[in-house]
Length: 563
Image 1 (cartoon, rainbow, N blue to C red):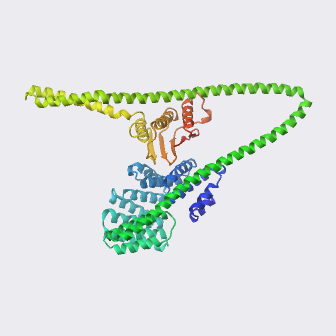
Image 2: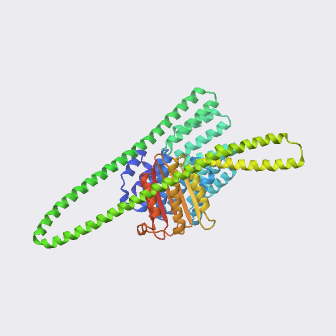
């Protein structure tokens, strides 16, 4: 697409307006993937990680469908980077990096290997700095081999940063940062020059050369580049403020903190503008739909007029024929009406069934809570009192050997009973989901159904920082449980991936398997009762439920629920 070539040269708002003007209905799968990818890049480059992740996940799935595994692997690295910046543990996104390394090695994609080794090295800098340097040097060797100078710059910069911040070998740190600076200047790579000066300033601060550090920071501040610029300046102003504070120049320190605050307000406003823009887009889309409906009604009216004239003309020439036809049409309409009434009745019954299921679940939760409270308030307090009385008795007993053994055994039994009751009472909020929430519940069921060597189940949460109402969590868990059951019973899958993404105003669930797939239209009502119930439940929550499956090519199920 032409937009991809000019993407890096246009500003944020122009990028968004161009992307929003694209009609996705006329695009191939790969072109749709590219549009989602560019959406994600646009939000990501301008500090909206939450806005980007949804588009990146959609783009990755579309690239896989289009068999463009290079782009899909590139997005795995991007998602791993976002998880790292969102303070996820390395082990939680390591599978994404392992997947990228495996594909790059098998396909001999040296650029992807460089990108993966760079991300692994950055991820390990704090926990295992020496291992991080090993990955950076391994990537640097490949970058030199393929003569990719931009990767060389980034590897040298991060090696220097690791030596400075985590190993405190400032001589080596200075060597690699100067090397990165010289290479950036040769390529006139302004962004690389700016980062090199920031890192040189960090070395100077560690050596208490504060004036030199301020000089380097000022050079970086005056360099011009676009990518991540606002975020770069926020971090830069914090560094400058910290340096002035170390110099005891508190007036300057406060000045740069104020600058940082102004930029943070700009970022916050940009996020707000994105939210308003999304609302406007939805409103404009609805207006277009209404306009199209109005045009459709006009067309139907015009067609009706034409058909009426034709009908009158034909009526005079073949009245008998049309009378018979009219009778047949009435019969068909009557049959259709009976079918519609039957379907309505069936839908009402299904809705009632779902409501009954909800009542049963609610009753189970209340019963668990009641039992736990009774244990805690009654039996738990009795055992606690019994234990206290026994301990008083124990302290006054005769020092008899047999009595000692009897007291010890009895004390152990009472302690065991008391701990069991406490454990049950502490579970008083643990219904289907438990006290930890939806994600741990899904991870727990994934561990239970996984079979080593036969079935791998992976759970990928992103942005799941808030708890939902208990009823909502129970509903989502039941949906996921039903879909996993179908995948195991019918799909014959060996890999299942569950992606849970929480945005500002919605939760997105994507469940993918590599099973034999199916044609959703060919499923009978009886066979698809579980999916039908999920569809009804999603509709009750004002959400959307989509199945993307082809025979022999696996299944992807997408659920979007507004919050």
